[in-house]
Length: 413
Image 1: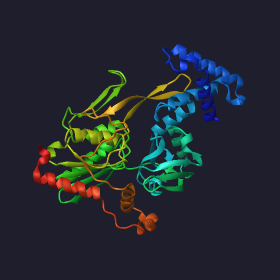
Image 2: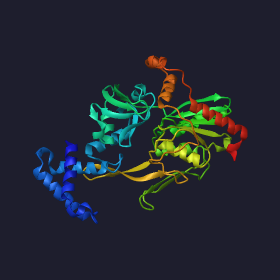
Image 3: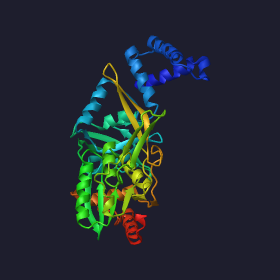
């Protein structure tokens, strides 16, 4: 019904536009005049009177206005705003996938490891066509997220499309409370070459990474692979804490820029108090299409400062800033007000970060490798037994690059 009302409003605006159809409004009063005319027309004549009250019409219009700007801007009524505050205050039930709109399609940025979505075989790049039989093309990004969240132990049904194989699949996933460790698999993979994987950026990430690094340094670290593949991002402050572990004091990590000079501008620089640049080791960061947001900030900063080589594939390209404006009636507006830029002023949003050395690897192969590394692989033995042996060609390339840098000392220049 909401979609029908939005369509009705849009049609009436077109029909009522008159001279304004080809001329832009010069001030807000002209636009409000047309809006009021349409509002009254719908209120008096729309066939379903229950849906034609002023309150409903205004809220539907605000919803349509915000969601048509970009996938991240949103009007939230009081209940939705409270739900959002509850989510950020603690854990929540869900299936553990991060989604975004890409080319008009609801697309999986990345599944979080050790979550129901990951175990169900969802991979980066999958398109979600339906959630509980509702077509996602008729839903906003926030509505889709809301449908997939719910009480742990309840089920949600998805219809997915994998673009690489054109395979459409219907899967039922049981929600769980999502709580995923962010720093994993800290180890030596070869003599002197260490490996650390960050699955997401949350509050403990910087502290946990620092502890993992200290252990590897004490073991004789000579080169580091930092794996950000499939990392959908997280907290900006956490990304800054990670980046400054490898950058000297005063180095720019990321900055934001709004529409006008000085608007929404923020700069994050390294405090340099705990950085590991003096430990004399080169770095390679692994990235792919599932690396987004905070991952792109870290990768872009260390690439710009020539502190790390990037190996893998182009990142997702999610780098916009949303500001939250609470309203008097308990509702709120979430509005995109700025974009993230790397130190060299590269815009991240819709562009992504390009690797220094491109090595492609299907998302399905990376998923199978992660499953092999899982603590309880019994649930997926049948899947693994049907697949040929898979090598992590991107990790192999990263190790090869590190060996070359260690021998040539090129990374010190």
